[in-house]
Length: 214
Image (cartoon, rainbow, N blue to C red; front, side, top):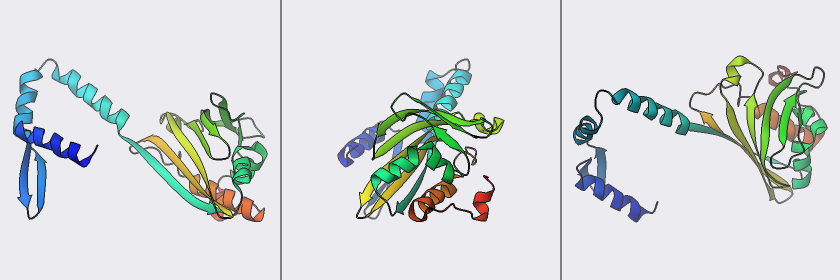
């Protein structure tokens, strides 16, 4: 919305008595006016429909109240080499500490993260966008425990921007619910650090924190 649009909207709410205002120096502060809002509630929502309205309101809030996690880093490499490291199963297994991700990396294709030695599927998803070597978007459903399975589907976006002789990589993990299980997104710092270490040095990241994933 434009600033003019916000001002117009607030003015209409103020005229309807749903918003109260107060001047503080050069600022005009706006506050919800609970009394007329409650009168509207009492007039239009009776005792029979109130429970249903409350349930639907809670559902709307749960679906729309999502969280995103954003991680940024610079890697001394080319966009093409970085894209290959993100999408090649053999390379990716080196910095995801054994987990292998398989997909043909085209929109609509299935994505699967599994343990090569046992075939156990740790997570699955669907590729939504693939624009090599710039942008990759896919869904993610964690499967390694009942707790994370209950979190449902989230979304992961990889964005690659060339900066001189390096790349600016941004990973955004969003469509997470408020208070989501940290196991779903907590491993990204280690994975991204492993990716950077592998591309810049050709070595595996062996810090104590990463050992828990081996």
